[in-house]
Length: 244
Image (cartoon, rainbow, N blue to C red; front, top):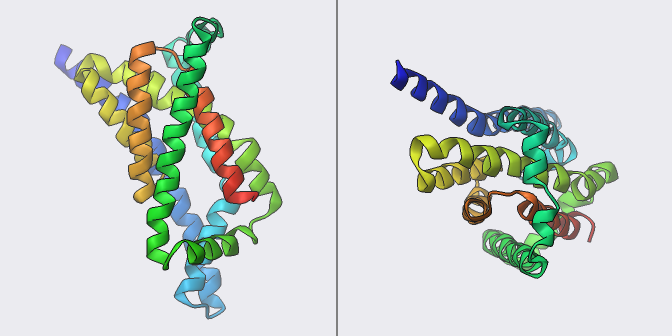
């Protein structure tokens, strides 16, 4: 009976970590299918279909935050609610050895940005070079509504930086560790975090970031510094992607 309960609990934890990916995939497929139908009805080319799907995904991307906040609040409640959140985001944690904490935040931002911009450099090789890749990206960005860009720069980084850390680091590692051990817990949450961002090369990059963040979390068992680094990284990345 005990083994049955352990297996049931483990399945539930894994479900909570991977279900956001499933929902994200289903919603993005639905949006992509709708966008493709519109272009096909106009007799558009395969290239136009790809552009339109990407535009639609970034235009209606607010569903990311809905998933993040919904799962984050629910899992925070399971972890202890307000008391657990207060412990995870206690500003005293930042004030103790604050120079070390600031250095850690800066280091995490730099590592993340290097990985993300390295990803862009790799992706540009599939488009005939950086210049053509930028032209392709500008073509997408110019048709995205301003409110979607504003969401990406001003709202998405905060829902991601707080609630993704709650879901995959705070809940994921803490709940997987008793069943699978620390090493596997860190790896599995990083996999779930990676594919949440979609099945693409970007998932590899976010897996690596999730791995790094995971190892920082097991050393500190607090989310404040991770969330701050995550938020700033996303603000920088989204600003240069959509506002510049």
